[in-house]
Length: 555
Image (tube, rainbow, N blue to C red; front, side):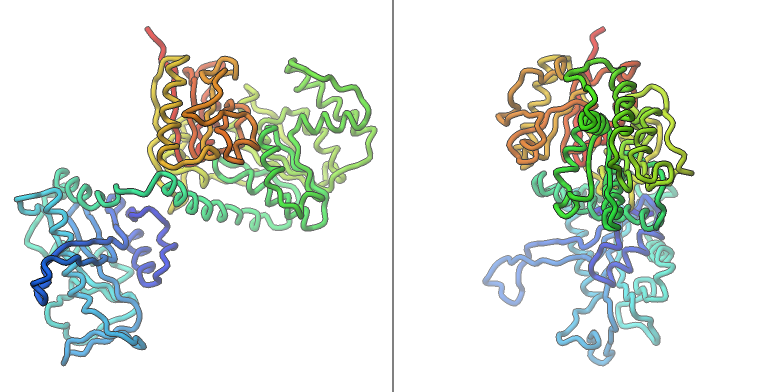
């Protein structure tokens, strides 16, 4: 599939005729072809009718500019609707239009002339352009009969019947020119010259905050599409859903919980991460707060054990207590308490130890027959060295597509676990993650501060930025620091969400959450204590911008 620039789903183009053309171009042209949509231009020229005014600014827009590495450039002008042509006056009109229609072939020629000059001035000054330059007009809603207008050949006229073979039409147009590139296509220097000239305007990008904002709109639309899985599951009460990082599992889990609540059920939503539970509870609409209870697993255990008046220790640092004793006390509490939930939804299921599921089945009014949904990603298992068993809920339903991160961050996540993680068409490409090797300690803190300062200068807000350490909080490079780039640091979600501070956390605590921009610090080599799963989880928390500070080991 050819790549559309700007990088969005062709189906999202509002202009219907251009949408039709974009969809067939992307489908039929080779994957190394680049298609610029709505390419704008401006130039100064002398007004021959008013020479005393000197140069004036002319502007226009090419509907499509296609760059084919085999041949060169073709400019397409698209004219939708029912077009009419009067041979006597050489006038073009659109049926039902109240104003005259410009000659589309003249428009295409003018656009091509302007872009030829642009490319020549920017990349080939004083030299002949070493590639084909041509133009065509597409009438996606009309077919044609009779002889062609003056100045038009069949090769550069594309009608509705031609759309299903538009790729071959464009190739034939290129081949009709006397200029014949080599078997390998035009030279790399020529191709680079074209792309550098055409994309230089786009390098004058909006502020970083605007770039992130635009990408966020695309990601939101793609995430909404993932909810179609729940439509597929229909009225199924028990299911397990496996999804890659960024596939929208938590969002779907919340949607499933809300649908259970809409049916009048009292729902328990339980996850592993305390900060994730706090985040989701804060996001829960008021109308669902009476029906949906959100807890992290060990908080649920503590709450029920205390309510059952069973002793619960104040402070425990023993992992065995949390893994074995807390679940056992929870089950004891269930024996004493009569309250139950009508449905249970579990997120981060890969982090639940095998024995924990007994209590989660018992807290369900229907027990092993009651509504239960589990969402999980085995690649995000960072609390257990070995896989844990889950309830027998049948074959997992799969969410294989990342729709949270940019394409480049998703690719980086996949490389960590040796897996290709696909993204949906139209996903924003985003910026390349920055991975630096930095000495531990103060040098790491300085590098983190430099990156955060740059992001703030480019318009990001504190509540868009998180600094996450791969180390323990006490050993992290930011331990003891009160601020970065003059902005306070906090571990408190409310302060971060309110934009009062930049969040600082650890990989374990931040799992399940996300930030528009993230600096990952203190990253050791992958080994026994820091596995590839930790790195995968950490990378996937960054939606748009990721900077990784690996610890440089001196030899």
